[in-house]
Length: 292
Image (cartoon, rainbow, N blue to C red):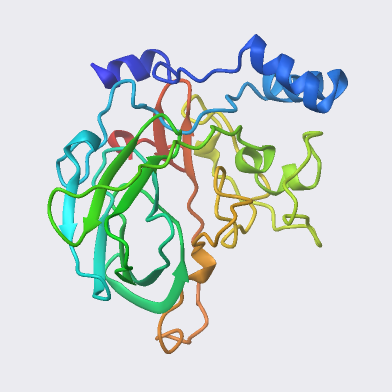
């Protein structure tokens, strides 16, 4: 039933659409002209600035090892003990931003592959991904393992504590932020092609390479093509920029000892992840799996 609803309306479960109240807040902070320009940009692009998740906590209950937030799944660790936690993104279609407030996490492995250890305080995990993190259990009792959904509609939560039955304060959900043009339109947004302000730190120094679109991408299965993709491995992503602590990026993940195969590629094969967001169709080079 959920899938059928999404096929009819891709934003069916998004109850965070921009409102008149949001517009008035924008007018108060950025002025009438910029507030109107912001709305005009999103309307002309026919995109949703809060399109983070297909299904929200209005329908899902987010679980940690099968337990809802009120169930308070608990792992036991003594103060001073070195602990490894393996996070598996077992949700169907939800990205989570994970942290243990006040605790530094050293990422040592991802998707079963060891990486050079990198210490952060938060990381984003998607469906099917795995991150192994290590930390030293601090003094002072229980700590909350907090995994909020990328759309900030809900969270999964557990506890790491010296004894069962303990709990720590659960942080509030972050305020939901709007996507930026750079999140939707690749490098063209950074070059100001859409008239929006690109996020600081993602300015272009040279013209990026143009994508080579297959003929099959020009059809009803694809509602948008990015002509100039951007390299954004050092970008933590929407909702995680400007944090007061270090957030993991893909640029932080490196193979211990360097590239195990230093040969230069002999061929380039370009594949595009494509789709039609309104019709909830997902494809490679515009071709769905059952038409492939």
